[in-house]
Picture: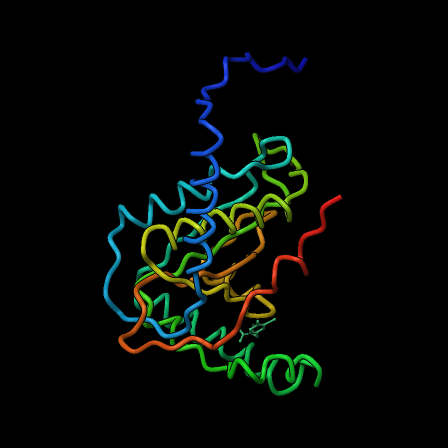
Length: 221
Ligand code: IYR
């Protein structure tokens, strides 16, 4: 027998429309200042900060509230080195043999290659695992919309990192199964995204890229 949840009054404060506009624009401007960073300083980030970042990510909505994610926070130098070695091996193979010419051409202006020093330099790597299912008392319990749910959680995480004055990069070494091997994935778990977190290196540069104008990405009707 499944029962319904107990329902409670929503905790919500209605704010005046003008203040709503102000807040929406302030958040927009804050988000506009976010950039993906590839050059990290080794300056540390406190565990309390890292914990608050993943706690914010874990507030994301998820299919049937299954919360199909796990965040592995890697600070240990030896584990970071193992991840770098394994990631660079896959990335080298990708850049040299697996990525089709059109993809390499699309990436060329960004100047990325298979070298991933940030995997060792950044003080922490957050590896996000997606759970397609979990074993609950030995029984398989499926997640629903796990890709959407974990994608949203990653969006929250990236916004939280930015709000904390730190930088990150959405790194997707491919294939990522080595992360499950190094970090110990549970049944049903697969690595979804790797986010180095830290401070930018002195003199860090970012490409002069621009976001599409709103009229190209928004339709009103
Ligand atoms: N995963 C590789 C390649 C890469 C792919 C895309 I799409 C990018 O926007 C950037 C890089 C890497 O991390 O280098």
